[in-house]
Structures are given as structure tokens and as C-alpha cells.
Image (cartoon, rainbow, N blue to C red; front, side, top):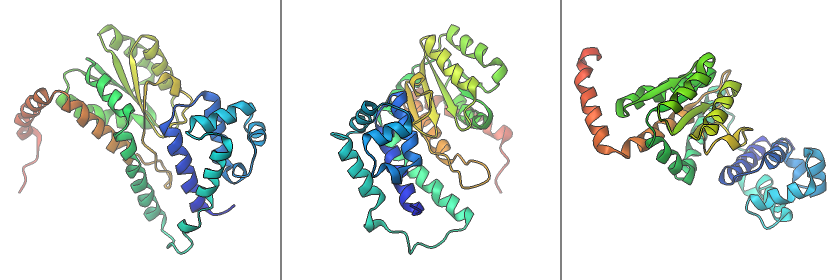
Length: 284
């Protein structure tokens, strides 16, 4: 099947189901296979899918149930409907330039945040991050800039913020946060996932800290080490990944955290405004 719009639409549909439900590692492994073989899965039996994905037949059956269907046949039927929907043809759609396609993709990525922002995972993330002091923010490599961005504004409204963006000292940083009373940590984990960040999440959870991670897909292999997994899809249409959705999700998360103590937030913002004249270039 070479109908790319239909495949991308169906991938988004399936990822949406994954995002709404917590899956086991073997179930996520099965989803990875399905995402790469949608046309085959649409006509495959549980035995076929299990053999191709390298899992057991009961795993495939339980996966369909975990995604909200009464059984695998119902899941397969829904997948067929999505993949071969004749009412959503893009044959007459204009061909977009690479930059226009990237922009359209990012608009879709940002629009997909609506579900995340209204989810229980978001509420839990706000609860634990608003309740921790100090607040540690982890981000390495491509995620370093995202962590710095969040930390820059977080320092305006929160009293004790630490950005951990050096792999060599990350283990020490997590331990120090714990010793200083931190009850939660936030990590930005964009592709390719640094092993040091994944290890830091596991260490934080082992120390009894709640873990929140902003990731690009709900299928990350380290999902079991994250208490609140917040998904912000990454744009992949250009030479390098773009993180527009991550920025929107991050600043929305900070806004919700700041709103938990509105009085403190207002006081700190007013204090910051008094310093603006020292560094802001005057407007003409």
C-alpha cells in the first residue's frame, strides 16, 4: 500500500490509542511492529501478528483489549476502517514544499496536545511538580535547550530551580536533589534518547521521587520508569528535528504549576519586572 496520507492518518490513530492506555513492554513491542506494517496487520490474524512481532498470541489479544476493544477482530476492523476510509481521500490535495509540509506537520503536532493538556497525566504532573522544592529539570543533548528554556522561565515563578544538562554530573545531581528534599523531577527526553537521562529517571524513581517526562511518543522503552508521561510529537520533515510542540507543552505545564500558588507567582513576577529596566532595550 502506497497511500502515504492514509498510512500516516492510521499511524496517528493507533498512536492516539496507545497514548490513552498504559501498555506493557511486550505490548509496546507489538505496536512498534504494527506501526511499520499497517497494511499487513489489517488482514492478519493474531497468530500472524504474534509471529511477526516476536510475541505470544495471547499478547496480541490482550493488546486489543488494552486499547479498548472487545477483542482482536474488533480492533482489526477498526484499523481497516481507518486505513481504507474512502471519505478521507487526499488524492486532490496540493503538493506542499518541504518547508510548508514541515509547518503543516508542526501544526498537527501542536493540535495533538489538546488531549495531553486535558489528561489525568497532566494533572498528576502539575501536582507533583508544584509540590516539590527544589525542582530539578533534566535535559541532555537535543533536550538540553528545552530544559534550559523551561528552567529560565521557571526561575521567575518558583523559588528553587536546578537545570541538570551535563551527563558527567547527572547522577550526582539527582542524588543531591533527593538529599535537598526534592520529591519529583522533570525530564525532557527527545530522540535520540540519551542513556544517562534514562538512567537518571530510574535512579530518581528508586530514590522515591515522582518522575515526569516530556517525550515524543508514548512508546518509549523507559515508560515504566515514568509516573507521568507527557507526549509532544517531534517534527521530522526537515534536516533536524523540530520541537514546537515540546515548547508549547512545556510552557503550558509551567503555567499550570505557577497557577497552583497564584499569589507567590504574582509577587515574584512583580519583583522581576522591577529589574527589567536594567537589561531590556528601550522601545522607541
